[in-house]
Amino acid sequence: MTAATPPLEAPPLEAVVAGIAHAARLAGRKPADVTLIAVSKTHEAAAIRPLLDAGHRVFGENRVAEAAAKWPALREAYPGVALHLIGQLQSNKADEAVALFDAIHAVDRPSLVEALGKAMAKSGRRPDCFVQVNIGAEEQKGGCAIADLSALLDSARGAGLPVVGLMCIPPADLEPAPYFALLAKLAREAGLDRLSMGMSSDYATAVTLGATHVRVGSALFGARGSAAA
Image: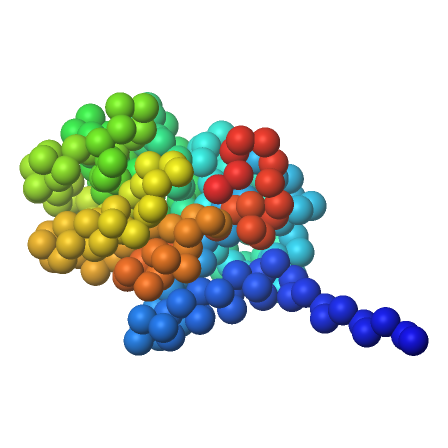
């Protein structure tokens, strides 16, 4: 008796896109309203090109220097790439970040707001900015305290930053849904409609709770040490 042929698994990009679409429809949302940021940090150009060849154009990096080393050539070969900085940003790297990235997801303190405001005024480039909230009040994580969010938003807007939304990373090993729901509530109260939340393990939950940007690394590229998102 011949064994049945096992079903073919979808390529990672197709599987993640399908998962986002399914979660969006469950929540009564349009899949097109969710942007998949393929987190390419720590991965070489050879690992990134298959996604580019498949038509994906939105990528996330953690470090300015790493992105500057590998993305100019890729962008020349693949027009239309949007690059998002999703890692912590040092204030002294603000000029480079503004020049290189189309969105910055970790605006989290007044000194960075000031540096980004000066860099944007000097260069004329205005990448979208997400304010990162330390949603679980974890000492080891970046992000502003919830109690400080209103003041930081006022400061960012006053400095001319194009603040478009909020970003968070929930505590590890805890159910993320309450933290995603809280970020969505904070965004509504602040008059912001974009939410950068959800990674490989929880992006579907994030989408059902309103994520407009999900940051997916290991589900697309495979795990690579502790840096996979």
